[in-house]
Image 1: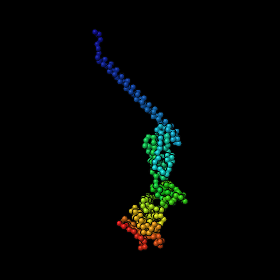
Image 2 (image 1 turned 180 degrees about the vertical axis):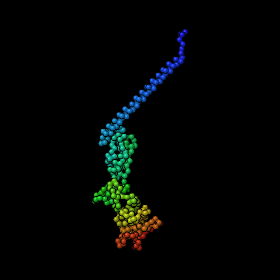
Image 3 (image 1 turned 135 degrees about the horizontal axis):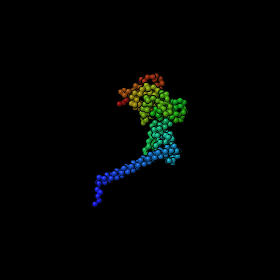
Image 4 (image 1 turned 60 degrees about the vertical axis):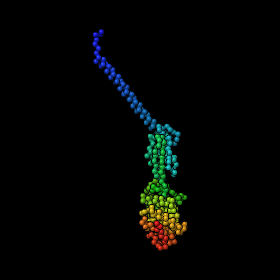
Length: 312
């Protein structure tokens, strides 16, 4: 038998050392792999950034087939516009087909559209998918025209100036003539009337639709205590102030119906509701021939006039 003794502790120590060495090698390989992975990511990010920067500057907004940009916009849909073309809206937005989606500034696009198109009341810009843009337009509705500078300013239901018309434009009969105090900065795209006047005008327009008040030519809100309407150029409706205006307009419609029934379609004169209240609904119709001989600073009380109260 060999005289050398077997040292179990020494053998175990050598085995443990080899295990530690192998473990260290695995850890080092893993570290190297992670480092390489990070370097690859950094390199990819740098390359992508360079490509994006280059593509954002080179893409041609007039070339619809240009799709060179990374994640370039494929389509732009415009909804809700009737006054302007899709091309005008898109051009003003600054967004174009082929532009990198990462360089689309939706807020700035909406602001540009609002600034350039007075009829646009609200606009939203969204991307329903990664490469598609949708522009949604809400347009203001014209409520009438007011004298402005050397012509006429179309006013919208948002109180803003929508369009300038020439003094003798053939389109004037299409709109209500609004007599009111305009704001100092009244102009295209700017508020033309104050909030109270706008509320009165919109209430009148709303009451007119679908009723026999349809046919109002002039709306006079110059004085809040003496609001008046010119119906078809034949009957003046004096409303007084704007208190209980909605119910007052409804009663004006009922009174007009009774006046036409009693005096015929060609009736002329004045319907006075300045003494009206919900608790005491009252109106007075004065024919034109009597109206010409009476002062109009106060509500008509002549016994010759036709008085109408709520039949209920």
